[in-house]
Image 1 (tube, helix red, strand yellow):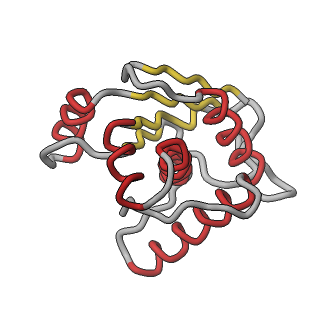
Image 2 (spheres, one colour):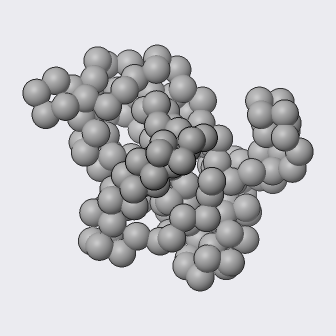
Image 3 (cartoon, helix red, strand yellow):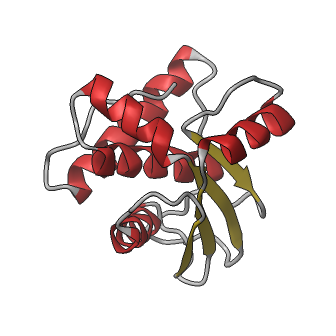
Length: 157
């Protein structure tokens, strides 16, 4: 699996941990071993620009996802085709603020946001209540398994 991390934020981040998490999610969701994912960390100004341009909403946000090949989760008997999963863009400064409010570390918040972003790339959403229940339940499950039973509480919606 190819996971590339590009930290343009100036914020100190454990990039290896983000790669390990992405690979864990790929395996759990039966994503093809040759699928590609890019994780980009940006500052608040860059995130605000993306948020306005792509979502038509003001201010910076915590995470944005940009799917490429519209891959969906596979099954134990049939993994996804190989392809470009897409880009997850994270803003560590927003994550740091949310982590303080939620009572966990910035690193945990970035793991939560990475999981959230990858699930969006795999076609999950949370617009409708039943979609939110499914996506956030899966997000909690994946993080809990990755962290050995200690998933941080969601702060993103």
